[in-house]
Length: 219
Length: 276
Image 1 (spheres, chains in turn purple, blue):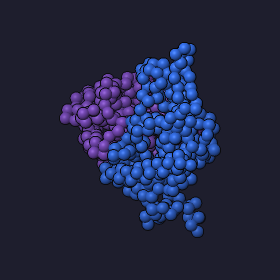
Image 2 (cartoon, rainbow over the protein chains, first blue to last red):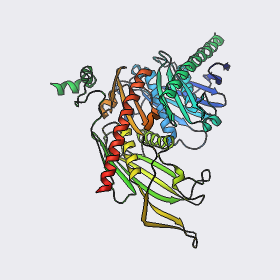
Image 3 (cartoon, rainbow over the protein chains, first blue to last red):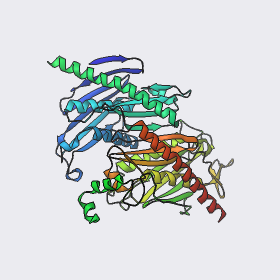
Image 4 (cartoon, rainbow over the protein chains, first blue to last red):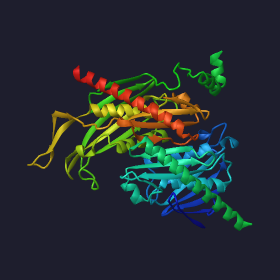
């Protein structure tokens, strides 16, 4: 397990572990502060005829909440994660097959959607699926006084005026996904995107360190 | 010839049009389809609206019911939106429980109601901790031809502005709610958010108000919701091709113009309903 503290654009302590489950083809657990998500990837495997796409793989994302059954909120998060993964995975290399990504919430202490994205990316990487680029999730909260907090905790999320989550790609550092809550000005939006892009550099560096350390251990 | 080309390679067919800055249905890139609005079409509902954006048709009905407020918010009523995509509207949807598109759209509308505070939920409270109004907003798609979200937001806003709530009080003698159906008053709708959806073709071409075909062919979709005073209340991009800040600004600028157009349209239709 690796832990690293990130300063400047303040993010909470990140930690990540890969290949911790034996059954899935790729797995990861990702922690941002106290928020923790477990991800497992199965595939490429056989696909149900009704879901088959003739020129690419079918990706299915399942989000399991900590308690109870997935609701409408999880469905909309599933859509966000799935379409982000679809854009970065090279699905046309596995036509007529299925990929399943399961995300299990272990603990929610804010910035959950960004933690889903980070865990998903690490699990896809662990499964060795071909991707055109990596992606990471960053959550920004705009406080009542206009201050922008990156990677907020649940308490900070509750107090804030607006909450914005972005997925940033590693190739050009541009916005792949955006999901917002609350009202904000155009200027604030552009500011949040700029901060997220800055934060994404740190997260990608963390990805790199984490994978490097893992493979150097195995050698 | 053109029909054969379209069947053989739909994407290339579209690219040829987009290269000339127009689309197969005759629109330029940043042009919306004609939008028509009919308010108060369902007489049995407390408020209703029918919206057509090109072929996409959404009907919204609002039903108000009395309930006890939640323990967490005793002084507030609540709004429950629900988007339904029945098999009638497109061959893509099967009967049975709502699929992902319908659920994602319902969540989008619920988030929008919360973030833009269209209605102050305090206004829905009849008596603190005892009685409040619940507004069930049912959005039904009758014809699906892309751009569901824009049409849903227009329908919801128009129906809310059309809603007439009956007067309700808790009787001092029986302690039961008494509703006077004759005395009705309108809801106070404070904000006017309008959604504008965009699609991106081949990394660079930005088009507005996509049809179903265009949505399927595009590499990314984005919905921007703006309200008066150039505030944004949602920038929803579920994934897909990444987008530069400059393109995003283009979307926002177009969305701001659209907001003014739709607000004007809604006000015009509302005043015509009132005078007739």
